[in-house]
Image 1 (tube, rainbow, N blue to C red):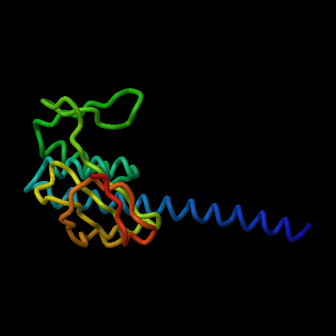
Image 2 (cartoon, rainbow, N blue to C red):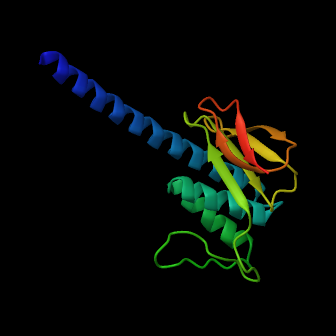
Image 3 (cartoon, rainbow, N blue to C red):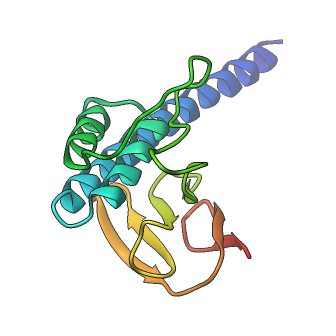
Length: 158
């Protein structure tokens, strides 16, 4: 009986630790995306806005909210319209639908893959979330859909 109690406790403790690790990975990813948004403000305000939006969507942090405010201020013709039932951007002035932008995180939260129509580089960008640095641009067609747990294998949809 004691063994069963220990096993159940171990399961719930491992679950709690996993949830904490995932939450921390989302915060780190959000901060990395917000930092990239700040780097792009002067040269590409539309791309900076996309990074800021995904930072906020990944996890709302002070950095993501600041990046979003700075991106909107840097792109005076951008119009943010939030639906009452969903906390996301539903359109831009002059656009019938949101632009195609995708971000996926590896299961351990260490790597992010990003692609967007706002990005001048064709392909998929890989980022080290912990250091907030771009690893490389994969010159591949498709939309990132999943990263392996360690971020070494990327699945795309063509």
